[in-house]
Amino acid sequence: MHLLSANGRRVLLDCGLCQGKRKEAFERNRNLPFEPREIDAVVLSHAHIDHSGNLPTLVRRGYRGRVYATPATVDLCDIMLRDSAHLQVRDVEFVNKRRVREGRAPFEPLYGPEDVERLMGRFEPCGYGGRHRVAEGVTIAFHDAGHILGSALTEIEVEEDGARRRILFTGDLGRPGMPILRDPVVVGGCETLITESTYGNRVHPPMGDVEGKLAGLVNEVCARRSRLLIPAFSVGRTQQLLYFLDRLHARGAIGGLPVFVDSPLSTRATEVHERHPECFDAETLGVLQRGGSPFGFPAVRFITEVEDSKALNSRPGPMVVISASGMCEGGRILHHLRNHIGDAANLVLFVGFQAESTLGRYLIEGRPTVRIFGEEHRVRARIAKINALSAHADREELLGYARAIRAGLARALVVHGEPENAQALAGGLRELGIPEVAVPAAGQAVPL
Image (cartoon, rainbow, N blue to C red; front, side, top):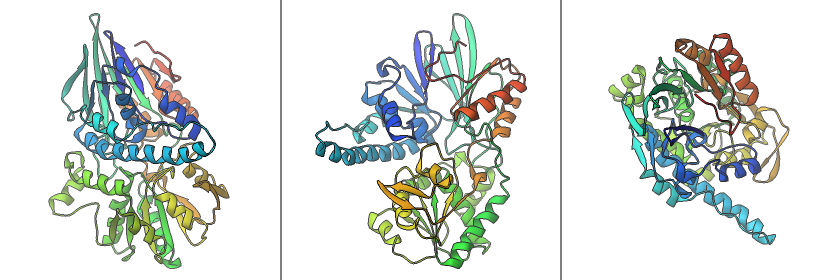
């Protein structure tokens, strides 16, 4: 959440859910650091829940303005926020059973389906490139960020007291040369850069490693007749995995191994991808023009019904199961982990960032036991990871982007990263010669 104030107007850049330690996240998500009724407009960079997930709370608390986003982002929010609302209601029902037994007052859900319904009527779809007035003296233009479907770099132009300022907000910056989506657009001529720093102190392995490593893991579970469990974000990462598995399948590198996408949200997100070819790179467009699909091949099956999901747990291997959530903080992946993480023949593959205090982070760190649904489980399955699939720019790519737009930059504000990552990126930006570089604290005001 980044709040831009100018001309007596207030424009909110993103409105995401905090994820991590349950109690801390619960408190932060419920206590917005501003009065929603005083916000004039919201500009949304993309649909991931850590950027969009608290928009229904904003509406529930009285926000009446518009939400500006790309058409693909609007379509993804339609499915992702409805899913989030369902989880909010379900999780509170579970917690309240215990609270009532203990004689404590029940919680209310953060928001419900009715709040998402009201929110969806407030979206204003804006295509890439065009300028849109969002408040007095404030216009925006979206440019492809190459992170997930519909993700946008937001170029903001502010006129106030006769002066004009241009700001570039990265949201989450994607990577050049990745499959499916186009490369991030270079947007020059801005004075202020607000940049994410998720991988501000790390460099991703080469993409060339992905197919070979994935094929090796798949063939390993084939030999053991076991299962490969892949926690994956429903938007972006699941489609990337299907793309690579399709390529391996076409080459005969993984045989006819069945692949199950066990996530209703991932299924719907894949359908949304197929409706937005304007976001695809030339290679993916070529597949579509030849009548194919980069996300579907004979061995893949999408699972939506609960009973079909349960049946996978008793189905003999080998198989690949791709399921949400990507950080193992909810969704059907938890049921698969509960049933199979204790079997040394199985593999759990992580293909995305794991935030602090999430189950995914605990597994990556090698904890011998973990809690799933409140019960201790010994981790015997092998844990593997492929970092090259990340949709976030790494340190060198973030610095490379800043170098490409450096002319005229007066300042860079480093946000959206764990403290050591943000500070590391800030150091690199200073070395580029940007005059003013800061890592703002939560609640800090920065004059532009």
